[in-house]
Image 1 (tube, rainbow, N blue to C red):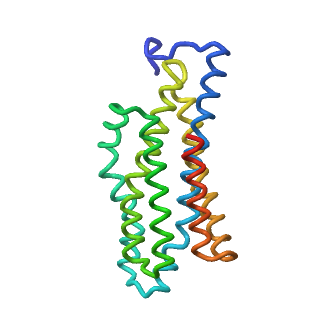
Image 2: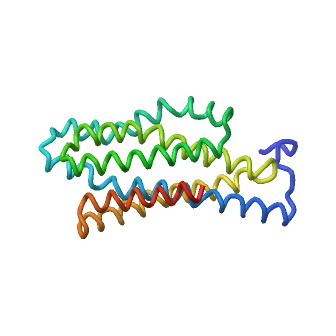
Length: 196
């Protein structure tokens, strides 16, 4: 049973609207970051196979993002506290621009192994900055009254972006090719930087 003393203070309708507007202002950047990542992801294993990379190396490429993100999360949280959540979010989006450029370079130069692995390692730090920065901004926007509501809206945008991008990335790769798909993914995250 919840302790009444620990319950959040009641928010006025005006506060609710302000919190919702603030969360909806943060959400597009995180949505576009997730979408950009999703667009690029379906190409990675297929390009690796076509280049003759061993399956263990393709697996390492795919896992590198999460491995780096786990290591980066505590440091990025400290950076967000010291430098500010908005700067952290924007830094993450800029890192993701670099990631998409590395994917594109690996495709154009026909060196997917080295470029894709490097990109996925950088992507872990970039996505950590985006997700922690976005969630921190949401919690700040929600204040004491509505931190969960704001965080829920931003998290929904983060969660929707990647699967939408996966579908779009598969379609784009089929119709316009790998390089053009990476260009579209790069353009998507650039828009995210501008929005942020």
